[in-house]
Amino acid sequence: MGYLYYIFSSYYIVVLILQAVCVLHSIRRGNQQKWIWIIVFLPLIGSLAYIFTEIVKRRHVSDLQSKVTTLVNPKGRISDLEKQFKFSPTFTNRVALADAYLENGMIERAIELYEQSLEGVFKDNEHVIKQLIHAYYSVNRFEDIVKIAPKVRNGMNFSKTQTNLLYAFALEKTGDLAQLEKEFKAMNHRYTNYEARYRYGDFLLRQNRKEEAALIFYDIMEEGQNMSRREKGDGAIWINKAGEEWRKIMQQ
Image 1 (tube, rainbow, N blue to C red):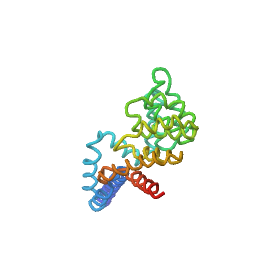
Image 2: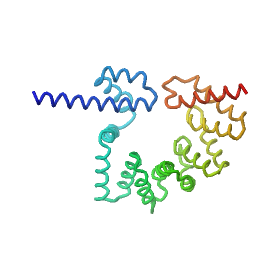
Image 3: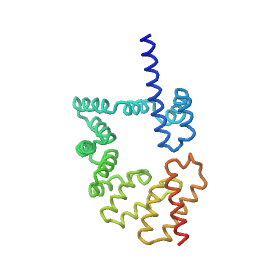
Image 4: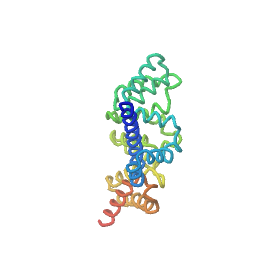
């Protein structure tokens, strides 16, 4: 009897973990309405269907395992990485540990390791610099962001990343409005970057450049009208906000 209870309990815990992973992933991708019902009412089958449909086909299985481990026992993963780094203090192990620190809100420890990593042949490492930008932003070290961001701003697809937006925020905080506008223009890509583009329109509005702001907001709103809820994803909130701002300007 005790053996059966152990098996049932283990099964229940595994299913709950799968459900949690799938629901969190679904919410972040903005496709939660359809999938959450399936995951809730068909716990095991729904979770497995979601994993193979929405996660595995986009990422390697090992990446999924890493995320599940982090969700279930983040401190255990950090402890393992600390031991690995202590045994072999390589660039790869140092950065992996710094990434885990950053992901778990241990910002100062992450910054220390990232800064130590930017030496020798790795002094301009793109991944480390981008992660350092995120870490600096978390502790309001805006001037440090402005110093290091130019090393990676010309990289491929940088203008389509959240890192570029953080760089733009840092430029505004430090008063470099000319460079800030250059960054906003670089991020003004159609059918993407909705938060960055909304922020650009908001910046123009605060500069009393209403006509230019209205054009930005209108473009975002128009694109949203031609997209499904799934296609909008996380951009839906910014598309809606852009529409609201455009209507406000038109009523003035």
